Image 1 (cartoon, helix red, strand yellow):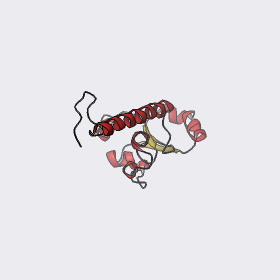
Image 2: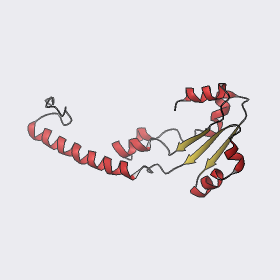
Image 3: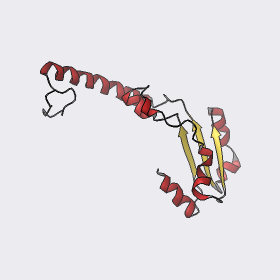
Image 4: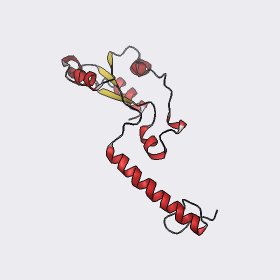
Length: 139
């Protein structure tokens, strides 16, 4: 979802519950390109509790944070929260390396395959990550 969609929700009076996953950056990119790549870190001082006032000052809303599973479970069982009579934002904090196990398995397969491609390319004196279709570029 884009920020423009949030503006549309406010404009049209919708009352969704928006979950913001706060995992200190781009976890999927960490899984794929390396866990410590600096460009995966985003600004740690963003205040997602101000997201709705930023887009629609004066719109009735509620915001919540959940830093533990118990906090999230408690919120999800709360009657007032589930009434969803106003637009709501829930900031859910996750570990920056928390991503689906299937992704971890897929990334491992990709890393092995990329290493094999690189080794073959180096033996042939070709660019390490040229096309699969035999169009590798000379180094």
